[in-house]
Length: 257
Image 1 (spheres, rainbow, N blue to C red):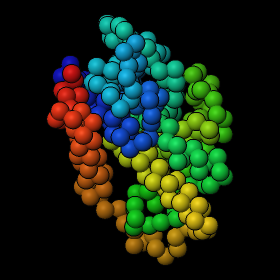
Image 2 (cartoon, one colour):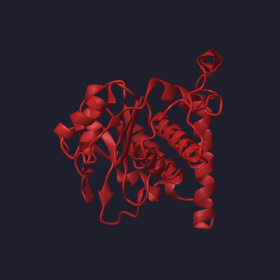
Image 3 (cartoon, helix red, strand yellow):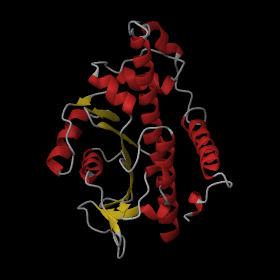
């Protein structure tokens, strides 16, 4: 189990860095989690040496019980559980099929919501998963609070109404999925929709939903073409960005250094 748990830590850490590379989080704010069993999850925690989500290492991903205590001996030595752990716990308790949760702060999504711009299916083949995400509707949790207790977590979950993503007004988003990869890819699609909406409005245009007849020609192309391929791209993009940033060659982060 230890080897499998270490692989999962590495995956969550990698997903944190992908989210940061995409501008969905900045600085030390934001966290991702992955459910391990009925009572435990892996989640990004902070230490006194934390340098930000973009620099997340596997060691920063700790095994935590749903009540916020250490999931095993030593798991919280030198680490602190996120204040907003209830976002992850309450989402997983309400929707067992959602095994991964990403709480992120994409500026474009926050700005679009504050400007009164509803996320709508304004394009199609440009991003088919994003189009379908928008068509299903993206709900809004209208309180701009730090979700640091179960009561607020339950409020946010109620606002989700079963949707995989919810906008937290004046705050950020929560994206939930069956995998960490999908949770981040959904957030990327939501961010792209918000950015496009803001650009159309800035150009003086009107946001219009695509035509009903177009949906039949926007099929589910399967994970090999969508999520799997998209995630390979995100990892390749991340390696390139980290190589440029580190300047001395590929980053050692994936090795857990």
